[in-house]
Length: 214
Image 1 (cartoon, one colour):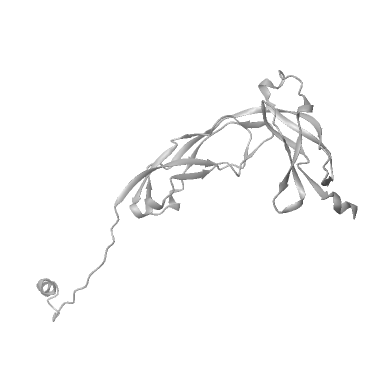
Image 2 (cartoon, helix red, strand yellow):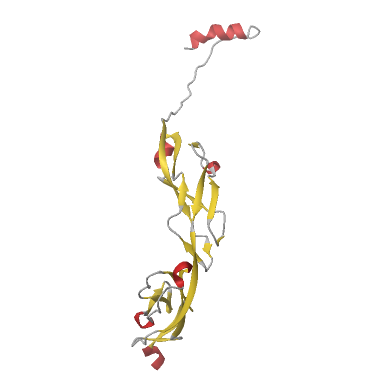
């Protein structure tokens, strides 16, 4: 109380005349300190693969989860995973690096680990080109009908593959969001052992048959 601390002020400041002391209160909000484990993910959406490689299996992360500690109100709102970006724009071979976690982006949260090791294994690919025609449509007319299709095989088995039956392959046209007169070319079925493919050109212009008759 104010009466209890009056003697203290009088003793500490003898040169002053203390008539009275006004007490006040300070509100302090307390949170429990809690911890939880979050998964680590790697964002490869901004990394381009060179034409001659493909990813071999899953991306290896060590550790693949870390412990964070902080006020329970912060930890409860923190996602159960943290996505890290690779510090590269293009990948052309195997990759193994230590990726730092920018802990400064997360005020008042303590990270038990401040970096992870990322290992990305790749395989070498060899392209083989074939040429396919897009079947005529009763609804649309196309700006092009013949296309080069590059099939990328794993280099170690490319020479042992038997001749591909191109008659079993078929091109389909998918819509492009927001572009009614453009279609995206895709293979209806991707052959076994093909890691990826490329169609040149990848899109074509299309018009309704009825519109062309007008």
